[in-house]
Image (cartoon, rainbow over all chains, first blue to last red; front, side, top):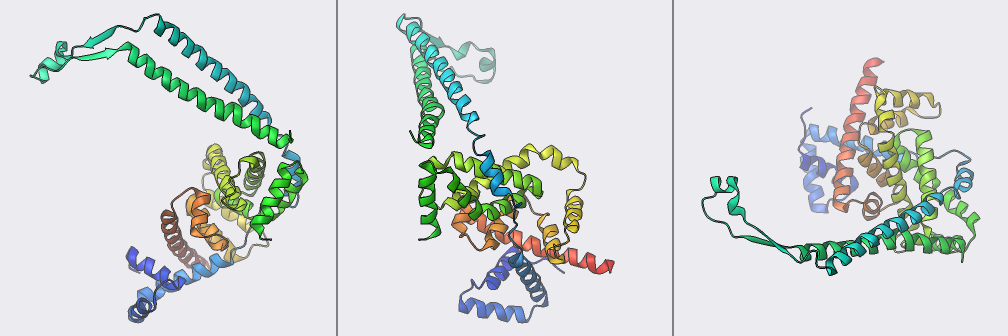
Length: 174
Length: 186
């Protein structure tokens, strides 16, 4: 049997589901009458539809509920470790930020470096025009990193410490 | 009181410390949860374990459940994700079997209560990928709208609609092939 176009396949399913408006349905039925391939395909789709509709919902074992209820208290062990890891991660982040702030206030990153791309052999060989110099401020870079660290610290605080802590309090009813 | 409202009342009481009431929610939704896991994993013991894990995860995240959607939709999404991660974790075990389809066929044959129709359908469904199989199963459960299926599977409703159409066409094709083969062996 030749393969039908995807549009025709979709229309057959819409016809089967009763999703075609009356005029389109009538027009499609006319096409169907004169096309034996379409009729066969419709029959295949209808058979599959019937079998799928009759397919049963599966049932788990009889002691399923008892098993789940018996395992309910095993799970929280993971979240207590995650709070400790969160505190460690947060402490690490704060230490790094503290060191960066001390170095920043001591003026370690006050210098501005200028990148001169024209000195590169590769650029001289392939780009004939002179390129502008790029100045890089150490202070700006460290400030940006500090800001990103601060945002990360808030996320760590929220996800790994505060949220599990309050969830546990709600669950224990305190 | 609708099922949704009933679920919310139960959830509030469970969160207030009545843990035993969670068994009511499990009894209410265990079959569909298990069916979703089974369609993805195609192995009853694995599906049983994955669906149990889904219920346990749901219990421990109950306080964070967004009450705008139905509890069942939220639970089935957890079941879907849990089964998918089980499938990934046990990929080696699954793929080490030379021909999964044959294994599944034999397993299906071993179940005396399964009708031939169900066996053929299982064979045809085993040719689909797990997402298509799940979408098709949820669609034919006739419990969910396309929007709910899309929420459970974290996909766009349009994508789900296309997936279901393609999966129905594929199942029809596979059923035809299986029945032709069966007829030749008679």
